[in-house]
Image (cartoon, rainbow, N blue to C red; front, top):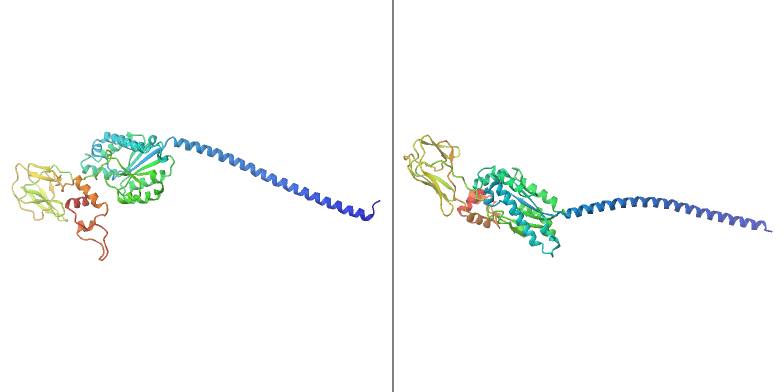
Length: 417
C-alpha cells in the first residue's frame, strides 16, 4: 500500500501533466486561430490575383488589338514647310494630290526600312500613315497670295480641305493667329504619342526652329523612333542629334517661299523710273515732270503722295528680265512734264484713288538659297545690316554676322522681318 508521501508525489506529477496538457491545448488553439487568419488572407489574395489576372488578360487583348493597327505619325509645321507650287495652285484638287503624294512618299520610306533585320521597323510596310500639318492659315494664305501661288486668302482653305479629305488619317489644321499656335499643337501631340506602343515612328517636320530641340533631345536614346523631315533648311543643331533625315521633294518646296509685291493695274506718270539704292530697294524717281493736274502732298513720314485730279499717263506696263528683276516700262502717249519731286519717295494713285505699288527688286530662288546657306551656321546681325549700327556693348562681341551682304540678301532679310 502506498504511503502518504508517495501519494503526494503522484499528485504533484498529475498536476504537472495537467498543466502540460493545458499548454498543449492553448498552443493548438492559437495555431488554429492563426491558421484561420492566414486562410482568410489567402482567400483575399486569391481573389485579388484573379482580378489582376483578368485585368492583365484584358490589357493583353487590348495591346494585341492595338498592335494590329500600328501607325507612323508625320508631324509638320505648315508655316515653314510649304507644299510645292503646282499643288497649291491647284486648290482642292491640289490638296488631294498632295495627300496622295505624301502618303506614297512615307510608305516608300517605310518599305525601305522594313529590311527584315531591324526589329524597330519590323512590318513597317504595313503601318498606317497619320499626318498632322499645323499652320497659321491667316498668315500663310496672305504669304501665298503675295507669292502669286494663290489668288485669294480663301484658296488655302480649299487646299486644306482637299488634303484632309484625301486620306482618312490626314489633317491640315488651322492653329490660329497666335505666334506659337502651331508650336504648341506640335509639342502636345508629340508628347502624347512618342511613348505610345501603337505609334511606331514619328517623322518630324520642324527642323527650321531651334525651339524644337528641347522637344527632341530627351529622346536621343530611342532615336530609331524619330526621323527628321528636311524642307527648306535643317539647322545644324538638329543634325548634331544624330537622327535620320529625309526629304520629300515632290511634296514640299526645297527653297523658301518667295513673297513678291503684286503689281497694281494703274499707270504711272510720265518720266518715272525706278532706282536701286545701296540696300537694293527700289524707289520711284521722277526725272521729268509729273502728270497734268497732279500735285504733291507729303505725309508725316515724309512720303510724297501724288494726288491725281487729271488724266494719268498711258501705256505703262511691267516686264521681268532674265534675273527676275521687274522694271516698269513706259510706252505710248505721255503727259506733259510737270514740276520735279525733290524727295523721289512717292506713292502712285490711279484714277480711282487706289494705290499703285511699284515692285521691289526681284527675289530669285537662287538668292533665297544663298540666304539660307549664309545663315545656316551664323545668323546675320539685323540691326547692323538694316540700321547701320550694332547694339552690342563696346568690348563685347556681337555673336552675329557683320560681313558684307549684297542687296538681294538685304531685301530677303527685310522680307523675313
